[in-house]
Length: 468
Image (cartoon, rainbow, N blue to C red; front, top):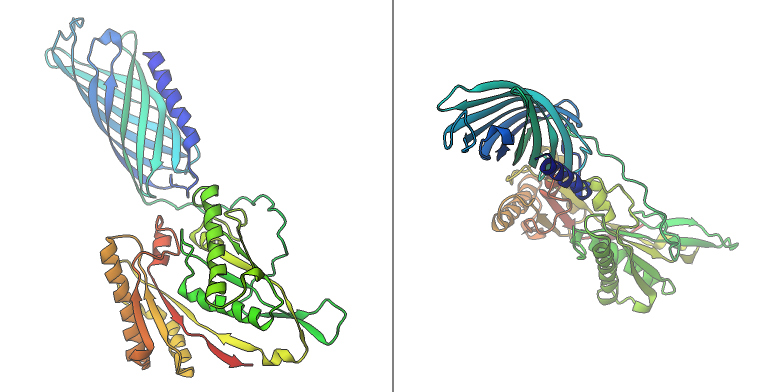
């Protein structure tokens, strides 16, 4: 029997290699409830049959590593032909109760192994004879796999030993679920520094929303260097250019048309969700998508463009948060600077664009008062430029059905359109409402924070050209 216990312990320990790297789930200060079901194996000298065993555990985590758990187990068993105390076929009830201390290893992982040891009591009550009640020590191992922040699958193995009058060894194993309530959510750890990337074809200039003007390095006092950059973020697992970034592509195209000797390297990047091989292919598709738009939509000669995917190797933000991962799902453009005569910069156009973000409560299309100022800015912009139009795009998280989310997102978009019409007097024919449901997430729906970001409105407004 001891040999069997060692095999089970080794099998559970081997599962450590499967541990994931999600946010910490075994929370400090959390209360837990765990219904379980398993089996109970008696010492051979007791001559009692192996039995099914339901049970319940109630726990509390003092820290993310250290916790305590009270338990109660029940098994209905029968005596075998060798049991002279109970008799063959005679029934008996077993009650096991007490408490364990638990020590969790790697609580920041999705897969959390732990050690357990404790003390309690065992009552064996035969139907036809006097029962026993003994104090019992136990020790063992367990494993939790967190499906969500508040729900984990679990499995346990314990060895029990007590005197009656010789030392008896019993074994139990179980599987179940653990529900977490409350507790402190762990602080997000900074991502490890990425390994140095291979040298880029050219140093990437710092991304800015408007063209940069810096003194020329060449000894020609009558010249200035005029540079432009591009930075586009993508929806999760997508290479489609979002509507709000199409003016950014157009801005780069206008620059390259004005200065036909310039070339550009379009670099695609991803976050760290998924395999390195898949992300490398996805980043290449993103770079190709921007290059294709410049060629097909704006007539830039393909010989002036190079597309290169770098996958997850060049993050610009930690991949430990939804906001960081969103920044890493991007394309950058490394574009030649143009040499222009001094004085011409006063004639260069300025693009005026506006992108608006409005968040919603779950399953709600009500515009919250806190966004009144943001909507007022949009209304003022449209009043200042009366020829522009706006597409109000509604989005949801992935909670609920696809059809229901599509209808909810349309309601959200229409609510904002109605708000702009009734409160600010924007003409209805200048506004379009479009619902996209949960098809365009900007964050992962695996956390409450990510789902909040996905319940949003994006207003994509026409750009206007204004001379400086």
